[in-house]
Structures are given as C-alpha cells and as structure tokens.
Length: 416
Image (tube, rainbow, N blue to C red; front, side, top):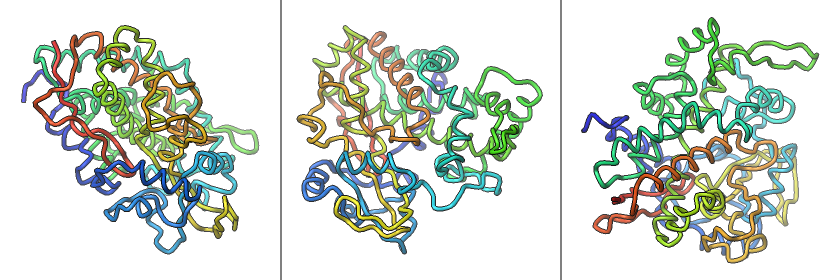
C-alpha cells in the first residue's frame, strides 16, 4: 500500500463493503433491482402484511430496527401517502414503545434520540439542531469537509485511475464526522470498526476527549455537546451527563460515517452512467443540487425505516393491532407515480418537491444538510480536478445492491 493514501485502503474496503459481514445483516446479499416488485406491491395496495424484504422475495438476512420482533405482526407501507402519513403521526407510529433512558448504561444508536418520541425527542434534538441547520453547512465545509476532500484527491490524482467508493466516497464522511469530534485521522477507521462491532467500545475513544473539552471547550461537536444545556419540564436546565454525550455521539458517528458514502456513490454512479449529464454538471456546478436531490428520490441509500403501532388502527385498508410494526418503504414511496411522473427515470429537470429520503416529520434526519454539503463539495471537486472523468471500460461497472442499505459496488474510474 502506498504511504501517500490518507487512510489504509484495504481496511477501508473491508469496513465499507456492502457485501461484507456487517452489511450482510442489512440485506447486503440482495443484488436485484427491487423497484419493479415495489411497483407491483404499491399498485396492489398501499399497505401489505409482512416485512419489506419478505414481500420483495428476498429470503436472506435483513436486520432492521423493527425486525428482531418475530412475535409481533409486521406490515409494510409502499405508497407515498401511506409512508408520509406514518411520519406525520408519531403518536400512532412511534420510534419506540417505551421512553428511552439514556443513562441506563447502554451505548447504542437505538438507545438514543433515534428512538425517542414526543417531548423527550424535542428536548434532546433542540440541543444539537443549531449545529446542523442549513446556514451551519459552511462551518462544516470550512472546518472539515473541504480539507478532507482536497487531501483525498491529492492522494490519487497522479495515478490516472481510482476506485471512488474506497478512495473517496467512504473516506469523506468518516473523516468529517470523526474530525468534528476531535478524533485523529489515525483513529478514524478504528471508530468505524467499533461502530460495526460493539458501539459501546466507542466510550474508550471518546472519554478522554469529553474530559478535555469539559476543561477547555473548542470549536467542535464534542464542545457543543459538553456546553449544551438540557431544558427540564420544570424550566430548569442541566448539562448533559457523560452517558448522554456518549449516546448522542454513537448516533452521530454511526449516521455520519455509515450513510453519506453510499448516497455519494449512488450520485456518482448515476452521473458516470450518463456521460452527457456528467459533462453538463461539470460545466454548470449549480446543477449539482438538483442532481443530488434527484438521486435521493430515485435511489435513497436507506430505503426503509420501522415504527411501532401504538394502538389498534385501520390504516389504508389494513387492520394493524397495537404493538405491531410498520415498515415504511421510502424507496417505493419515492417512486410513486401519483407524485412523480415517470418515476423510474433519473431526471434532474423534474419539478422539485420533497421526497422521503431523509425521513419526515419530527424525525427528519438531523444531519441531512451536512450530508448534502459533503456530497456537493466532494463531487464538485472531483469534476473540477479530474479531467475526462469516466468509468474504466476494462472493469466491471458499478451496480446498486442491498436491501435495507443500498449503494454502489466498486466505482472504477479513469481520468486525465
């Protein structure tokens, strides 16, 4: 391995392999296009009994939030309206059936804001929301994204070729989020490995950083959490405990290093498979925004999320008892012809209207503006610095695979 690379490429390939052991649990063995089946299911009915992967015809392992509950009835929504309405009514379709106790000693993403609802979710989200609003994107770009993008391109620009998933897409988000936590480049992949294996081990990495920021805050995300004050129902305020900081950190590190790289690969795949469009975007970088938005609609990297049904309900013609699980298939919702004309076509000129790629309602993805900034900054730099960027005709072209985490296979390119 060349020492010029910012990260160990072999280790990046192992940790960010859609067909590897971690992704396999999320349906990484699924290599077909699910959209034709989802179209048929949506035409038959907006909601079906069963899980998304079973209804799609995939019998392999496919773990997700609501799936470790074989004793509960499962249902799946496929139309835009059924999915959007589920997000709009968290009192009926909840992230968790019980309140989350962040200080219970468990460190995992599902013991975090991800599983909170109601007032608890509002109070915790308000602590970090200001760091993720659109006007804060420039803070992320100038502090961390731009430098990482530049260093990564520097590492392979003289080669005339690259595998963009490993050399670029996977590295940008993990470097951005770990740097924003004050974690060194040398430890960045350790964080990803820990998140894949045992998230609670992240405490060993974060503990000295949290202690240092309590003594001397800086301009980073850990300092934001250390200085944050949680508003209590009685009007009093209190600083976050270490356990609450770790809970936030696990969620942000997992989301920050685990999703954006796949969506960036989807955008690049769509562009590289359409050379005329790629050149159009190269000549007019303003077209990157609608290109990214269209990729999010056309192929969201996380095409399904789960909710728990809090009371008996007849929903879009299907009776769901309290305690059952509703799987929101946003991948199918985002191609609903009732909302988008010619939904299977990748068209950056279509009238822009919100999709469900980042969820909806009160649980709309906290980091979506950072994710878009990473994709926009990274792809713009590739198009600016790599002339004649194209797929390598001698290697297998990228394909989109995966069930509950979809992304591109290897993206081999030539340039210069």
